[in-house]
Amino acid sequence: MSLIDSLKKDIHYIESLNSCMNCGVCTAICPSAEFYNYDPRIIADTVQRQDEESIEGLLKSDTIWYCGECMSCKTRCPRCNTPGGIIMALRRLSQEKGWFTESEKGRQQFALKRILGNNILNYGYCVTPDIVKPEMHPEQGPVWEWIYEHRDEVYERTHSNYKQTGAGALRKVDAQRTETNLRSNRRIGIHGEYRNLFPPKSRGRRDGPGKLFSAYLYG
Image (cartoon, rainbow, N blue to C red; front, side):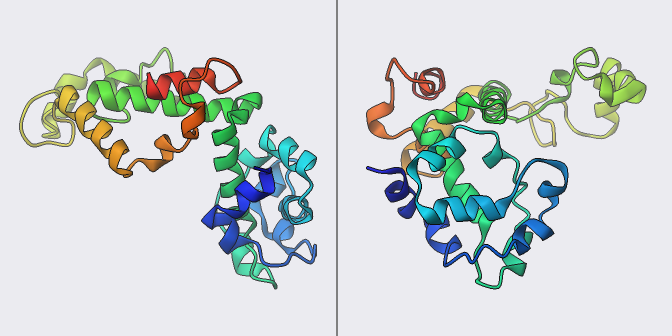
């Protein structure tokens, strides 16, 4: 199946690309275009031209990860296109092909999903206070360093029930139950984002740039 045919099956693509006239209004309003070498007008035009080689280049590039998904483009486009939605379709296809690992920004998505996924399975939370170590996150400053060193006392005062059973924002979560629930949710599609990162034929494959990510997700 060609790349454009794959995109045309994505609801984000279907609802986001009508008929781009290359006016550039989306680029003018785009916050990311101010800080990155990023032009949503070019992306919409590239996809509309159905240039397979150029689309593959996008899927392997940092460009599709610059978008902040603010959807300012949707509110201004005279043809009711949504370049941000096109970007969502491109990102999904990049993940399905395993090409996202060929760009720095794409690899950051891999790292983030792996870190947060492990935290959820191990602790029941995306982030817990004991994970944010001051030596690893000096940007948090001296106040956080003090809180980290006195976290048991601090969170007891805030009634967070830190690492304890019962009610509380930071209560101890049964990791085994969390993992069981997550695996069950994947099967019924609640976490379809993870399940669809790779199509069935590519799960467990031993070649290609996505092999490590596939192995991590599916064992």
